[in-house]
Image (cartoon, rainbow, N blue to C red; front, top):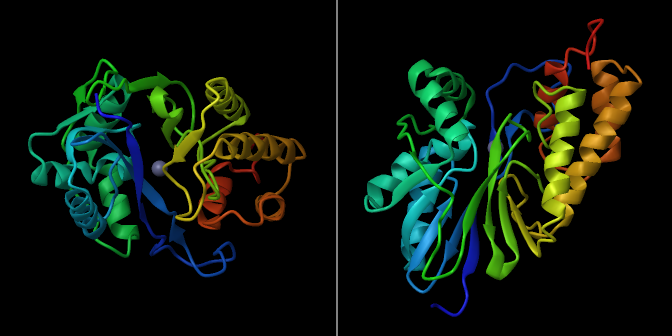
Length: 287
Ligand SMILES: [Zn+2]
């Protein structure tokens, strides 16, 4: 068995989005949040957790993995949002011996997008960079992702920013790679959420706290953010705060202003704004 596993992150910057400007346009314009892929490696073998959405960054990710000298045996996708899986096809071109795997619910989301092309069409029109268009549907994993005798497990959970998600647990490092279950110094998305879904997301996060992780890697993190348990605690605080403000029946601009004031150092207000608009607060039964 190799001595100890290592965890490294590959971070991509925020990207300008081509969205119509209006009263809600954030300072600095619309942006896509920082995104991260994570490499867990032993002496030679590695597991890549999630991919990145743009063509250019996917090629940079491949170069970064090659420079590490590690061989990805497995590419694991945490959940069915396009930014996490779409770039996997580029990684697979360069590491064809790697197996691309996910849980059942993630595979179902990806199969649906493969058929409809909805997300690819929308994001291709919004991104200032080319996004990857080729989808490879993952194979089903039983959750075992072990490297060189070290136990690594993929664990499916319920609600986060999508109805079903998952994380990767590396017990020997006390580490969890959580995809979008937690965000780190970046506004989490509230898109299409409601009070009960946010409570269910808080429960998912609370269950993660019970693991008492030393290392928590969120997919949307600022490149200089520490990968600590605070990512989980702050995401819980964010969702609780959102529910608290929403109970006061604010207008959309009021809600955005309150959340911005409550979380002033969080990056990428675009996510907050798009999420807030999706809640239709200015309609009678909103929030
Ligand atoms: Zn995401």
